[in-house]
Length: 481
Image 1 (cartoon, helix red, strand yellow):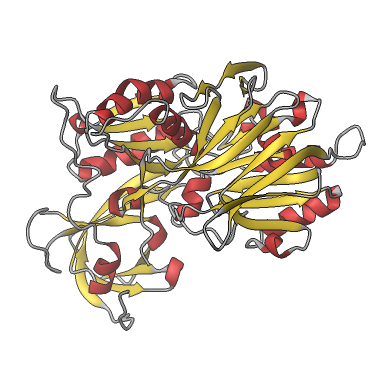
Image 2 (cartoon, helix red, strand yellow):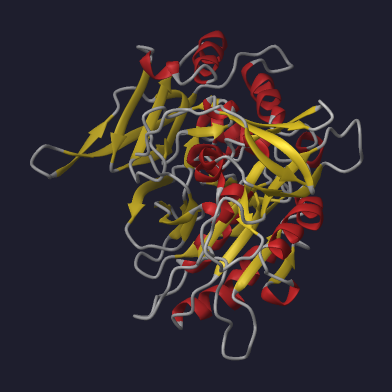
C-alpha cells in the first residue's frame, strides 16, 4: 500500500502551451486537479472523468517535465447536447508527482496489444451492443473508445468491430471466432460495450464444447452499457464516470468466477418479450439443459420483475424499469394479493471437516430467492454486502412468505448499503450450491433469471446451481488494495 503525505502546494507547469499552476486536491473519490491560469481563472478536472495520463513520447524514460496527455471522458448532459459522451486530451507538462502516481498509465496494457493471428487478422475485438441499456453503446464507441484507442496507438487496423444486429450476434461471434482461436492457444481480448448479458452469452459459448490442452481464456474488458450493470458495479468499474474505460486502460486480467445451472427436462429460454421459447444447450456430461452465469441465479420476485420488465416499453426507463415492474408484482392492478411462490429449497454446504451436506429449508413459501457471486445488482442495490470483487464465493439470499409491505421494506434496505441481510426474516449465507424443486402450476411463476436471461421450468421441474470449476474468461479489473 502506498502511503504519502498529501501535498497541495502549487506546481508550475503548462497546459495547452500556457503556463499554469497545478494543485492536486486529494479527497478520496472526489479528488480534483485544479488548474490556475495566468489570467486568474481556474479550471478543475474531476478524477472521476479521468482515464489516465500518458507520456506523449511513449517508450522514452518518463520524467515530470516530459510532455504528457491527460485523457478524460466528458459525459455531457443530454438536455444540453445531443452527444452523451465526449473524449478530450489535454497536453500538459510538469504535473504534480502525486497526480502522476494516481493517474499514469504505465507501459502498454498486455490485454490491448496482442499479436495478430497467422492470417493477419487482429485478436482485439470490440462488440458494440446497440440495444443494451438505453442504447448508448454506439455513440460511446464512435466518440470515446475509438478516439482513446487512437491516442494509445491502436489504429483501426488493430481491432475488429462487431456491431450487434440481433440477440444472436454475440453468441455467433463467440462460436465462430473466440472458441476456435482459444482452443488453438491464441490470446484474445473482447472490449464489450454491453451489460451483463454480453458476458453470459460469451461464457455459455466457451463452455459449450470441450477445451483442448492449448485453451487460452479470452479476456473481457467491459464498458458498462446495460441497465443494472451488476458486474461493473460490483468490481468497481463504475466508480468513476468513464463507464469502465479507465479500468480497460489501467486494469489487469483476473479470473471471472462462474456458476453452472442444470435444469430439468423441458426447460426453455423465454425470448422475444415472452412470446417465444428456445431450447437450452444440452450438457454432454448430464444430457440436461445447462446455463452458465457470473452474476445471479434467481427465482420468485427478482426473476419475475426482470422477466416482466424486459420489453421495449420498459427499457426506455433504464434501471427504473426494475422498480416499476416490482411495484406491479407487489401491488397487482386488480387489487389481489401479491403471489407467494411455492417450492422446496435445498442448500448445499461444507462442514468444518470439508464434507458437503444438504440442508432443506423448512418453509415451502417464498417471496425472494437468489444465489449470487457479486455484491451489487444495480449501482445502489447492494444485494450481497459480504461479497468481495471476484472472490468466487456463492452466497444465498432468501425471504420467505411476506406481505408486500415487508418485501418493500427489506428491498429498500438493500438500497441503503445492504442492511437487509441483518433482518431476522432474511436468510443470507455462503453456500456451495442450491436446488429449487418447483411446486407451481402457472408458467408465470416458473421462471428463473440467470444474469438477465429468463428460463422457464416446467411443472414439477427443478434447477440446481453449483460453482463451475472450469475457467472460461478473464475480466479486466483493478481490485488492488
